[in-house]
Each structure stands twice: as C-alpha cells, then as structure tokens.
Length: 300
Image (cartoon, rainbow, N blue to C red; front, side, top):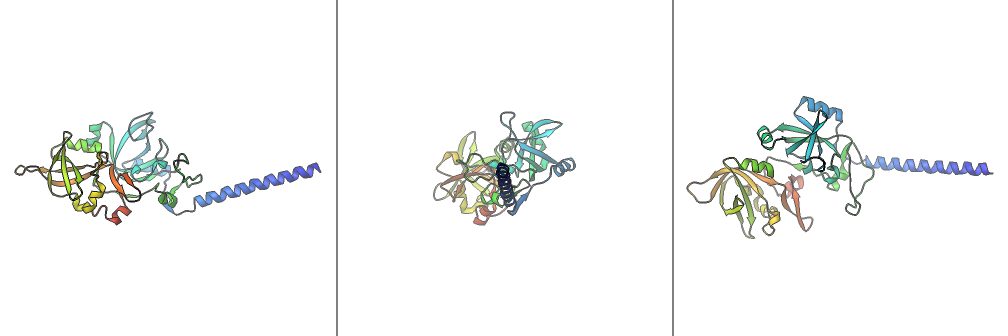
C-alpha cells in the first residue's frame, strides 16, 4: 500500500514537472513568435566584418571603470570610442543599453582630424547591427510595469517596437553632437545660433562668449525644413529646454547682425514637444512618425 502511494506521488510530481516544462516551452515559443523588427547577427560574422571593413565591435562603458559612452577591445585592452551619426542609443531604450550588456557592430569611418582633437577614435556611424545574444533589462516593475521574462535573444521584435524600446530613427546629416560642434566653432566660418518662438514669430540669436545677440538670417534657413513646426521643437519659456544650431556661413560686412547660412546642423540631443504626454522629450533624431506629421519636412 505504501509503495502504491509513493508511486502515485512520483507520478504526480512527474506530471507536474511535465506540465511546467510544457508551460515554459509555450511561453518561450510565444516570446519568439512575434514578427521580427531587427535580426541580430552572429559574433563570427561581426568579427569577419571588422577584419574586412572599417567597423568596430563596441559596448556601453561602465562609468565606474572608464570614461566615455562606448569602448572597443583590441589585444585584450578596452579603448574608448566616440560615435557620431547613427548612434544605437538614438534608436534603443535603456533596456538594451546597460553597461557592458549588449555588443554592437558599427559600420562607417573614422573622422581623423576630430579624433586627433579629442585624443580618441571618433567614428561616424552609417549603420549598426546588434550581436547575438540580445539581452534586455527592464529594471524594477514599479518603474517599468511592462516586464518580459521570456524574450527572443536573436532579434528585436514587434513587442520592442510597440513598447518604444526600439524606435527606428531616420538619420540625416542634419545633427551634430555638442563636442563636435565645439570643435568646429574653433574654425572660421562656423557659428552657433539659437531659435526662440515668441508666440507670434521666430527670433534668432547668435551665441558668442555665452552672450546672445539678436541676428537676422538669410540663405539656407533651418525653418525651410521645419516650417511652422519649429516653434514646437524649441521652447521659449524654459531655459533648460533651449536648442541650438551649428551653422556654416558668413557674417555680412555691410549689414549689421546679418548671417548668411550655407549649411546647418541641429545640436543633439534636442528637446521636443511631445503631443503624447504633457511635457518634452529629449531626442537624437526623427522617426517615421515625425516625418509623417511634418515635424521635419524635407532633407535639404
């Protein structure tokens, strides 16, 4: 009788284990069944790309161990690298960007004179790939209610898109990092300007030695691309939300405070009136929704 009871317990426990394994298997299948938004690549493929082309395998730095946003490894040594252009952080949320969490393959080219200026490699990113396995860290549930224990490690999927953790950005040559802007401002023909919306019209100011000088613009104006939406991107009320443009141009010798613009760049990150909530968000580029809504009208 005792043996029968023990056998019954074993059968019950075995059944429960099988049910649990089946449930976990279903969860894993569900996690991997959503449409793929961005496939991850194998490390061996990434390493071949580094050897063949001008590419780097990078990770987010641990601020307690070294300075800078990213690092790459060479001969077992971690070296800082600064990114311009299509930076992964422009398109991925914090759940992918923890210190030494995920690895990325960045493709592009080294900006040699800027690299010499900051004494580290400055790399202009034309495109990037995330390398398998893809890791996600959602943090505390109180801060982030949308938690996912099971998730695909070989791609970014539709769930990441829906929850805003992967937001593909349309990146054009209209953005410039603050450090890059400071570098160019040391050269002749480069200026820093600030737009202000006074409620009725757009005003422009030239920034020189932390002073703001009212100025008139002509030539290739940023407002041609942003149109009236410019007032929604640049705040007049809050100093901490001010945004700036770096411009290449020429100050008029005959007219007072007139700047002719040949080319301009919006300094990133920039503040943006977000219609989805009562506040402003910090941005590194424009996504497809922004283009559809006319936030950025055209590429000049």
